[in-house]
Length: 424
Picture 1 (cartoon, helix red, strand yellow):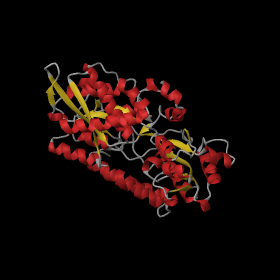
Picture 2 (cartoon, helix red, strand yellow):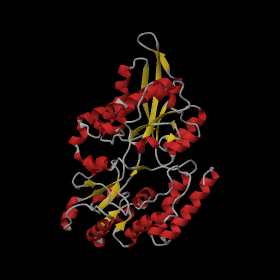
Picture 3 (cartoon, one colour):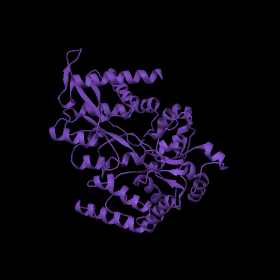
Picture 4 (cartoon, helix red, strand yellow):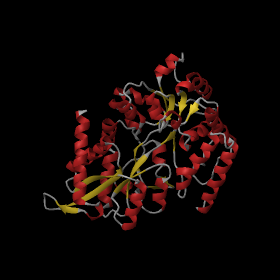
């Protein structure tokens, strides 16, 4: 706890520094040796005091070993993407930003908001081979690299082992059939307890498509693939969990998301990423939970992955110095990021680091990584991702649309967007 308080204090100091220096595109000052010190502003969405403090701490360590560069962190509160777009228009964006998954990265890349990193990677002999392919590929367009992965998390199965024991179930399900059967045994509507509590968002049902051998789009994100037998099989299984009464939406049990429902004791299982670990430990310390890899579908038990990355903006007046910061954050700073924040590494070489040995709760999250599929959409899909996918899938879950009709609608709308943007 003392360490976290110290990190939080560093975060406050970092915010004060940002207020003094402003944006990186304009910042430079005289150093102690008489030379110019280049200020690099690093921005991301405002996370917890812990994650904000970790970045401040990382940059403080970087500054000690790079006296000609002064890197400061500026967390962005509010709608991260909207605020950044406003700053890009005004020419006042930070030097470095975090690129997110789900379509944000392709938008910023295609609009030229972030710059290619290939020349910096080549000149500094920076190797990309240690990064998990799913995380790395997320921030590449063709042969152009726009971001270096920061962290990631695949979806995994969270479950309450005490509920399983009380129901006479030996362990977590390993197949879809077991998932359905276990969820039925664990459901008690009279007590508002359900085998599965999950929002019917696209990332949660898309994992079932992948496990059935399908997906929402092809790998190059140029063609919708919701009209395949595999997609229908996976989506139908997901929808029927709700229709059969063994799965519920969080609102049905007074929760806002699956992790909260699990912590409240209203869910025996939920599909979440590593972000749920600190939440459950801090908010519901008396609720037992464990993590398992996803139950296997007809083809595999692959998961969706949610990577983020550091990128250099077009507004940076000092891209070379910004690259030095990214090298540090994604290099030696990556272990610090894991150890202090309990986050999931993007580097294959770190999965056996002592931190993970000391925190076995991450074992099955790491086991889910090698074949994880990054959750992403191409440019133009903002509205489709933020509302259309969830709204249409909700109609299917509530038995207002058949699974076939829901997918047909999503296929048609997605294809129209692709055609407007030069796809198929």
